[in-house]
Amino acid sequence: MAKRPLLEVEERSELGSRASRRLRRAGLIPGIIYGAEREPVPFKVPATRLRQVLAQGATIIDVKVGGGKPMPAVIKEQQHDPVRDLVVHVDLQQVRLDERVTATVPLELVGGEEAPGVRQGGVLEHVLWEVEIEALAGELPERVVADVSRLELGGTLTLGEVEPPEGVTLVGDPDAVVATIVPPTRAEEAAETVEEEPEVGGAEGAEEGQGS
Image 1 (tube, rainbow, N blue to C red):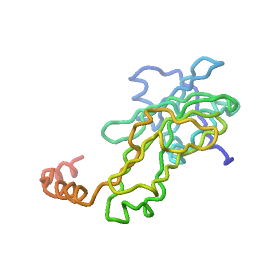
Image 2: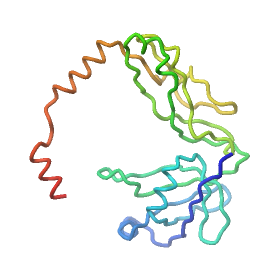
Image 3: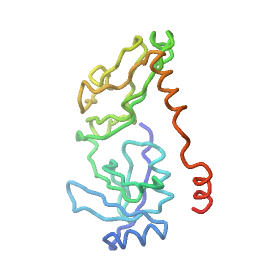
């Protein structure tokens, strides 16, 4: 198993929205880590380091609070700035590697080029991009792979038809559509609709962008 990313954080005493805004202005992101055997611990972490760890896409990370020992944890929730889409707060959940936990991981499609529907000119649409899973914390996969190589034109693949890795249970509606192959006419109509939509912003948008 690949080495887990290490996130070193500092315990924080500054609580509340005003304190959180001050931390962000200083380049720090507030967060909290929950654990079954300890009280929740508020922390702060450099925004650059948090982005580096999140970019690795690991399901489990090691979190070190101050001078303590690293502990495995999953990312429970991320809060983003609605305008800049940057993380402004993160919740972590300490886990035991020998216990089953739930996590949300990317859902990746494979075999699209081989699908009969695509060979006939259809367009593969990826509908469900993430899936909630349950597995031993130490065996959580970084992604779930869905094979669409058998999809016919107009066909769909549902969550219930996806084969998860051994020891992994998919959580969610089995009838949820994961992917579908759209007939060429529908795909062309969708493209034409996008082309016909008027441009937004124009010169005014450019001026606003210069002034931001």
